Length: 172
Ligand SMILES: [Zn+2]
Image 1 (spheres, rainbow, N blue to C red):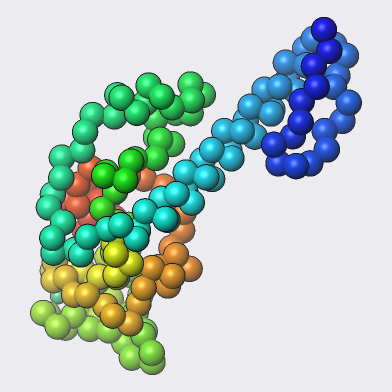
Image 2: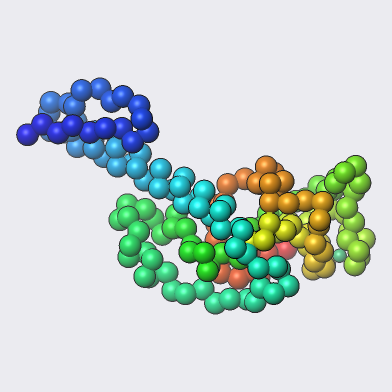
């Protein structure tokens, strides 16, 4: 039986191979392409989720539901760490920012302790950006927004069930 596959990325595949082993490789590759597209799409949906977020002070420390239910519907070839949490599970994004943060020509300092470097920067669901100094003072930063955060952050590489775990992961 001859099978014809169409590249999901829109590129042109060569003619379907004749022997069985190549055929398997061929379709495995298409499957991996599909997995990659899924991950990309999930990342994009995560960005869209920002808009529904609550302001930081109102966000409680939420217990995260067991991942079993969602893991069951995830594609079988995606490892659990690539699973993207649902909207309810994501309160915001965070990254460490070690150097001084210059906004509109001014170096930001913590109003609580005067620190000017080694921040944790949060981007919440309402697009607001918050700074947290090493001593744990949290300050909303109106000079920054989600667009700035997205330009300056790397890809999301890890999800944490609590703020504390996220801070620990980032070295705070
Ligand atoms: Zn401080």
